Image 1 (cartoon, rainbow, N blue to C red):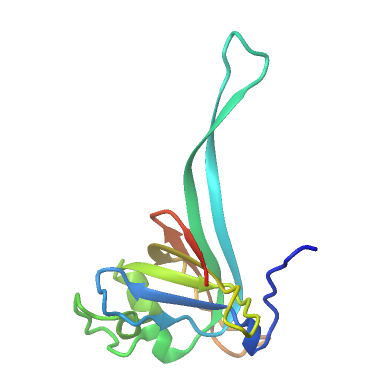
Image 2: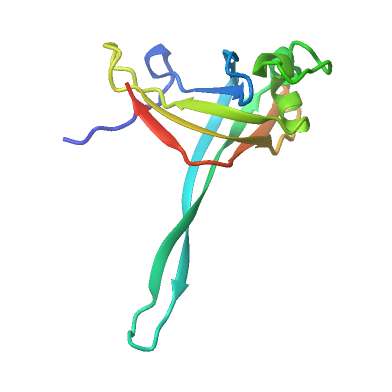
Length: 164
């Protein structure tokens, strides 16, 4: 029997993305609100070469390109932060907000909880990494009368997985 990661709506299957200022070990994190969709990318690059003694191309896995991206409905406090422009190097993700972390080029760590909770506290997969928030493009339309933005966290280190 196969085990699947269920990410449907509901409290037991809530997908969360939390970011922290990487240089602040005391940061409790900023949970990115109202995720509409999310994509986790862990793509290995491949170096290919051919040699005269073989008819096949040899391929070697090289570095990985890691990222998390998606769309969110904007919350003004979480988007602009609690300090709204008066940041210091010791500030937290909540003080910077998503926009401040991006525009300030602040290195963040992130935890993506993939929403599988059996109720017993087991089988809770979380993918963690670090990088920079980029790709913000807030927009609004008549069909969607709230601000929505795409975002990316471009990874600068290996992803790790923890299953508690």
